[in-house]
Length: 173
Image (cartoon, rainbow, N blue to C red):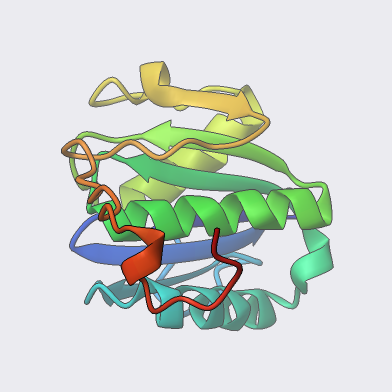
Protein backbone atom coordinates (compact mmCIF):
# COMPACT_ATOMS: atom_id res chain seq x y z
CA UNK A 1 0.00 0.00 0.00
CA UNK A 2 1.01 3.58 -0.65
CA UNK A 3 0.51 6.77 1.32
CA UNK A 4 -0.60 10.05 -0.25
CA UNK A 5 0.06 13.54 1.13
CA UNK A 6 -1.98 16.47 -0.22
CA UNK A 7 -1.01 20.02 0.73
CA UNK A 8 -2.72 22.66 -1.41
CA UNK A 9 -3.86 25.35 1.03
CA UNK A 10 -0.91 27.77 0.96
CA UNK A 11 1.12 29.68 -1.67
CA UNK A 12 2.89 26.53 -2.78
CA UNK A 13 1.15 23.23 -3.22
CA UNK A 14 2.57 19.73 -2.98
CA UNK A 15 1.61 16.09 -3.30
CA UNK A 16 3.72 13.14 -2.26
CA UNK A 17 3.38 9.38 -2.64
CA UNK A 18 5.43 6.77 -0.84
CA UNK A 19 5.28 3.11 0.01
CA UNK A 20 4.57 2.31 3.66
CA UNK A 21 7.95 0.65 4.08
CA UNK A 22 9.93 3.56 2.58
CA UNK A 23 12.23 5.21 5.09
CA UNK A 24 14.40 7.25 2.74
CA UNK A 25 13.76 10.93 3.48
CA UNK A 26 13.75 13.73 2.60
CA UNK A 27 12.31 13.16 -0.85
CA UNK A 28 13.66 15.18 -3.75
CA UNK A 29 11.10 17.07 -5.81
CA UNK A 30 9.93 14.89 -8.68
CA UNK A 31 12.65 12.29 -8.03
CA UNK A 32 12.58 8.79 -6.59
CA UNK A 33 14.21 8.27 -3.22
CA UNK A 34 13.39 4.66 -2.58
CA UNK A 35 9.69 4.67 -3.50
CA UNK A 36 9.03 8.28 -2.40
CA UNK A 37 7.94 10.84 -4.97
CA UNK A 38 6.99 14.46 -4.31
CA UNK A 39 5.80 17.18 -6.63
CA UNK A 40 5.69 20.83 -5.63
CA UNK A 41 4.33 23.82 -7.57
CA UNK A 42 3.27 27.42 -7.09
CA UNK A 43 -0.46 27.52 -6.33
CA UNK A 44 -2.37 29.78 -8.71
CA UNK A 45 -5.91 29.21 -7.44
CA UNK A 46 -6.38 26.54 -10.09
CA UNK A 47 -6.50 23.51 -7.82
CA UNK A 48 -9.58 22.11 -9.52
CA UNK A 49 -7.66 21.74 -12.81
CA UNK A 50 -4.21 20.94 -11.38
CA UNK A 51 -4.52 18.83 -8.22
CA UNK A 52 -5.82 15.52 -9.62
CA UNK A 53 -3.37 15.45 -12.57
CA UNK A 54 -0.46 16.18 -10.18
CA UNK A 55 -1.63 13.37 -7.88
CA UNK A 56 -1.89 10.99 -10.83
CA UNK A 57 1.60 12.01 -12.01
CA UNK A 58 3.08 11.34 -8.54
CA UNK A 59 1.30 7.98 -8.31
CA UNK A 60 2.66 6.92 -11.72
CA UNK A 61 6.21 7.98 -10.81
CA UNK A 62 5.94 5.92 -7.62
CA UNK A 63 4.65 2.90 -9.56
CA UNK A 64 1.21 3.05 -7.94
CA UNK A 65 -2.39 3.55 -9.00
CA UNK A 66 -5.46 5.03 -7.34
CA UNK A 67 -6.41 1.64 -5.86
CA UNK A 68 -3.01 1.31 -4.16
CA UNK A 69 -3.64 4.21 -1.77
CA UNK A 70 -3.92 2.97 1.82
CA UNK A 71 -3.54 6.22 3.76
CA UNK A 72 -4.25 9.83 2.83
CA UNK A 73 -2.84 12.78 4.74
CA UNK A 74 -4.57 16.07 3.96
CA UNK A 75 -3.48 19.49 5.14
CA UNK A 76 -6.85 21.02 6.08
CA UNK A 77 -5.80 24.65 6.55
CA UNK A 78 -5.78 27.34 7.70
CA UNK A 79 -5.67 28.55 4.11
CA UNK A 80 -7.36 29.88 0.99
CA UNK A 81 -11.10 29.12 0.91
CA UNK A 82 -11.31 27.47 -2.53
CA UNK A 83 -7.99 25.63 -2.30
CA UNK A 84 -8.86 24.25 1.12
CA UNK A 85 -12.36 23.22 0.11
CA UNK A 86 -11.21 21.55 -3.13
CA UNK A 87 -8.25 19.65 -1.63
CA UNK A 88 -10.27 18.40 1.35
CA UNK A 89 -13.13 17.33 -0.92
CA UNK A 90 -10.73 15.40 -3.17
CA UNK A 91 -9.12 13.70 -0.15
CA UNK A 92 -12.53 12.70 1.26
CA UNK A 93 -13.67 11.43 -2.15
CA UNK A 94 -10.53 9.32 -2.55
CA UNK A 95 -10.88 7.95 0.96
CA UNK A 96 -14.48 6.92 0.32
CA UNK A 97 -13.68 5.48 -3.13
CA UNK A 98 -10.59 3.49 -2.12
CA UNK A 99 -11.30 2.70 1.53
CA UNK A 100 -8.06 4.48 2.49
CA UNK A 101 -7.62 5.81 6.02
CA UNK A 102 -7.64 9.59 6.13
CA UNK A 103 -5.60 11.82 8.44
CA UNK A 104 -6.04 15.55 8.71
CA UNK A 105 -3.25 17.93 9.59
CA UNK A 106 -4.17 21.49 10.54
CA UNK A 107 -1.37 23.98 9.95
CA UNK A 108 -1.38 27.67 10.82
CA UNK A 109 1.50 28.42 8.48
CA UNK A 110 3.30 26.97 5.51
CA UNK A 111 6.02 24.42 6.29
CA UNK A 112 8.80 23.50 3.82
CA UNK A 113 7.73 20.42 1.90
CA UNK A 114 10.77 18.36 2.95
CA UNK A 115 9.99 18.93 6.64
CA UNK A 116 6.30 18.21 6.13
CA UNK A 117 7.04 14.99 4.23
CA UNK A 118 9.45 13.72 6.87
CA UNK A 119 7.05 14.56 9.71
CA UNK A 120 4.15 12.94 7.85
CA UNK A 121 6.04 9.72 7.15
CA UNK A 122 7.14 9.47 10.79
CA UNK A 123 3.67 10.44 11.96
CA UNK A 124 1.99 7.59 10.12
CA UNK A 125 4.40 5.12 11.70
CA UNK A 126 4.04 6.56 15.20
CA UNK A 127 0.41 7.78 14.91
CA UNK A 128 1.56 11.32 15.71
CA UNK A 129 3.54 14.01 13.97
CA UNK A 130 6.78 14.44 15.90
CA UNK A 131 8.73 17.56 16.61
CA UNK A 132 8.53 21.23 15.93
CA UNK A 133 5.87 23.89 15.70
CA UNK A 134 3.29 21.95 17.73
CA UNK A 135 2.42 19.64 14.85
CA UNK A 136 1.67 16.71 17.14
CA UNK A 137 -1.40 18.56 18.46
CA UNK A 138 -2.80 19.09 14.98
CA UNK A 139 -2.69 15.53 13.61
CA UNK A 140 -5.58 13.09 13.81
CA UNK A 141 -7.25 10.18 12.09
CA UNK A 142 -10.79 11.00 10.93
CA UNK A 143 -13.66 9.49 8.96
CA UNK A 144 -14.05 12.68 6.90
CA UNK A 145 -11.63 15.61 6.88
CA UNK A 146 -13.03 19.08 7.52
CA UNK A 147 -11.61 22.24 5.99
CA UNK A 148 -10.32 25.02 8.23
CA UNK A 149 -10.63 28.46 6.66
CA UNK A 150 -8.56 31.56 7.36
CA UNK A 151 -11.80 33.63 7.54
CA UNK A 152 -15.46 32.71 7.78
CA UNK A 153 -16.77 31.92 4.29
CA UNK A 154 -18.93 34.68 2.84
CA UNK A 155 -21.92 33.03 1.26
CA UNK A 156 -24.28 35.32 -0.57
CA UNK A 157 -27.91 34.66 0.38
CA UNK A 158 -30.26 33.90 -2.52
CA UNK A 159 -32.22 36.81 -3.92
CA UNK A 160 -35.87 36.97 -3.05
CA UNK A 161 -37.94 36.92 -6.23
CA UNK A 162 -41.62 36.47 -6.70
CA UNK A 163 -42.55 33.45 -8.80
CA UNK A 164 -44.95 35.49 -10.94
CA UNK A 165 -42.10 37.77 -12.10
CA UNK A 166 -39.63 34.92 -12.54
CA UNK A 167 -38.50 33.81 -15.96
CA UNK A 168 -37.97 30.29 -14.60
CA UNK A 169 -39.96 27.53 -16.24
CA UNK A 170 -42.15 25.39 -14.06
CA UNK A 171 -45.59 25.26 -12.52
CA UNK A 172 -47.12 28.49 -11.27
CA UNK A 173 -49.87 28.82 -8.76
